Amino acid sequence: MGRYRRCVAAVAVMALAALAASPAGAASQGKLAGSVPSWAKASSLKGAARASDPVTFRVYLGWRDADGAAALARAVADRRSASYGKYLTPAQFRQRFAPSASDVKAVKSWLSDQGFDVVYTPANSHYVAAEGTVSQVESAFAVELGEYAVAGKTLRAPSSELSVPSSLSAVTAVVGIDQSAQLVHTDRVGTDAAPSPGFRNAPPCSSYWAEKIATDQPDYQGAKQPYVPCGATPAQLRGAYGIAGSGFDGAGQTVAVIDAYASPTIAADVNEYSSRHGLPVLRSGQFSQVVAPGTYNHKESNAQDPQGWYGEETLDIEAVHTMAPGAKIVYVGAPNNYQDLDAALNHVVDRRLAQIVTNSYGFSSEFLPPGYLKPYNDTFIQAAIEGIGLYFSSGDNGDEVANLGIASVDWPASSPWVTAVGGTSLGVTQSNGYFGETGWGTLRAPLAGSTWGTPVFQYGGGGGTSRLFAEPSYQQGVVGNDLATRWGSPGRVVPDVAMVGDPNTGMLVGQTQTFSDGAYYDEYRIGGTSLSSPLFAGVMALADQAAGAPHGFANPALYGASSGAFRDVSGNPLSAAVVRVDYVNGENAADGTSTTLRTLNSTGTIKVRAGYDDVTGRGTPNGSAFLNALR
Image (tube, rainbow, N blue to C red; front, top):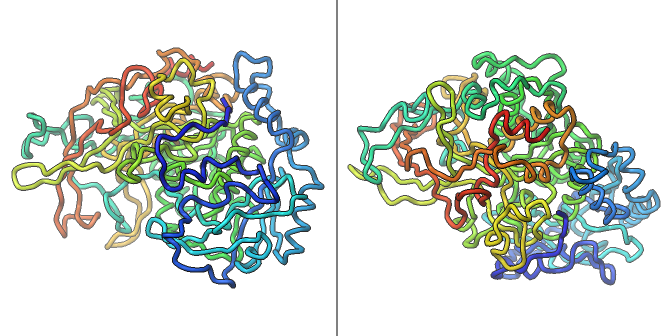
C-alpha cells in the first residue's frame, strides 16, 4: 500500500507523457512539475484567457514528514501492526504533520505581494485559498493562460508549468488555475437522456426478480426476458444483503456524504420515503447539512445544474439511511462542483465530522494533472491516520473504452488510499431474499419491429488497472497477477468491493420534483455506482457498530477477510437481459413510450470471474458473515 511509483503505461493517450513527469512538488528552478493538464494541447487551443477574468485557486502545501505520515497511515490500518486502530485526533495530526506556521505565512505573504486576496486557510494548513485575475495569475506564476476545447467545454489552463519562488519549498500544487475540476461528474444513472424536471418509471415492471416476463416482446438469445424490477425497496435491499436480521442499525456511527449544492427538500423527502418503506424517520440531530467554510467562490461564477445534484444527494442519503437507519448522517455540500469538492473533503477530514465518508463523483479517467492528484492523496492519508474510511464510486462507464477509446480506471477511485465500490446487477426474491447477482455492464438494444436492434454499450460499473499507482500491499496475493500487470509493472486494480449499481435493477428513491401538474414528492428507480458507494458505506456503519470501533481505512481488513465474508459475483444466475419501458417525456404516457432491451454482465475488457475480479472486486457483503469477519 502506498508505493506511489508509476506503472508503465501500455500506450500513450491524452499526453500521458505529462503524467509520467515527476510528482507534483518535485520543483526544479521554482517550477511545479505536473501543473499542466494533459488536455491542454496546442491543437485544442481556442485563444488566450481574458486578462480580467476572475480566478479562484488553492495553493497546497505538503505534509511535514510526508513519508512518516504515509507509514503511519499504513500502520494504523494494518491488523498485524502494534499501531493498529491507534488513530490520531485532528489536533494531533496537525501538530505532527501539518505545514509549519512559517511556511503558511510565507505563502500568504507572497500571494498578498502579488496582489491576490487571501481568503481562507483551513485548520490543518493544507492549502491557502486566494482570488485574483487571469493577468495576476500570469504575472505571479510566470505562465500564459489559454482557453481550450475539452469534451464539449471551454476550459482554462496554463500553457506551461507554473512557477513559484524556490523559497516556497512546501508548496506541492496549485488547484483551480486550470479548470480540470469542471470535468467532475456524478456517478448516478437515472434516465437515458437529459432528464425532465420530473421523472417516474413506466410500467410494466416487476415487484421482484422475474415476476413479470415480457412474453409480448421478441426473444433474446432464444428466450423471453423479464421486465425490469420497479426498484428495490429498503426491505428488499436489507434482505438481499443479509443485514435485516443482523441486530445492527448503525447506531452510534456517523456517515458523511459529500456532494455539491444542497437539496432544499431533503429532510422532508427522506422522512416521507422512510414512512412509506418501514424505516424510522430522521430523529432530531440525526441529520445535518454543512457547507465547508472557504469553499465559496467569491468572484468566479461556476453555477452548474444544482437540480441535477439534488437527485444525487437524495440518492446518497436515502441509501445510507436504508442500510444504517440508526446512523447519523452529515451532508457536506460544496456550493459548486468545479473546484470546491476538494475543500469539502478536507473539511470533513480535518474536523473529523464522520468516521465514514461516501463520495459518489469522479473523473472518467486518471488523465489529470499530477498536481491535481497529490493534494487529494494527502487528504486521504490524513483520513487514514484519523481512522476515517473514504468510499468512492468506481464510475459508470465500465472500462472507459467506449468513452475514451482506451481502457482506464476513474479517479479518485484509483487512489490506493480509498475504497473503490463497483456496481452489480441484483435480483431479489419474492420474500426479499438474495436471488443472484452479476457484474453491471449494459448493452442497449431498441425495439425494431418484431426484433431487437443491434445492442450498443450504454453504461457499466467502472474497473480496471491503474496506470499511475503501483499495486498496494493489501492487494498482493489476492488480485490476480494478470490483472495487476495489465500495463506492465504491478498496479492498483479497481474496484475493491461492489453493491448493486445497475439502474435497471436499482433502488427506488423518493424526491420532490417538478411535474407538469405541480411540484410534489414521487418515487423512481435509479442506479449507478453513486448508489453502490453509499449502500456500502451504510453497511460499514453496521460493521463499525459490530466491531465497537471504526475500521478507518478498511482496505487491509477487506482484503484480509475470509472469502465467506463476500458473495463471489462470478456466475450469472440472472437472465441474459431485461426489458425496459420508458415514458418518452419521462413523466407520463402522453407522448408515448419506448421499449428497449438491456443486457446484463456485458462488461467489455473487464470481466467477472471467480475470486477477485476487476468488475466487482472481492464481491458484495454477505450479511452477518461480512460483519463478523470484520470484527
